[in-house]
Length: 151
Image (tube, rainbow, N blue to C red; front, side, top):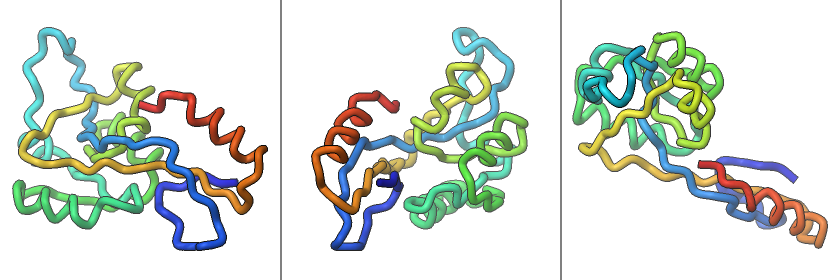
């Protein structure tokens, strides 16, 4: 059994969607209280920081094209792994678009802030469980994992 962010193309494997996950703009916490601080503007954030890209295998090509059309002065840097991307964001080295479930802890701890971007229709990505066999044991484990709320 394995977990993946992409649909399998192998007909011999059984794929089960676990959940859908909205992609959100993630920025370093600015140190202000969210209740009284002025809202962060996506346009300013994308001009002030590097946009850390290609940390997810599904959505970056089309999303990056849309971002560069709306915000042509956006500077980018490829970072291929989510956990490195999050460390860079927390350290104030950049911003990125990540699935909401991957930043849940950092948002709760006040290390990352989610910024709205109404000008752009952000993607929704899925997480899948893949099994070689479709037996009772695999189905029970997938049912168990599916009970958790990941967002």
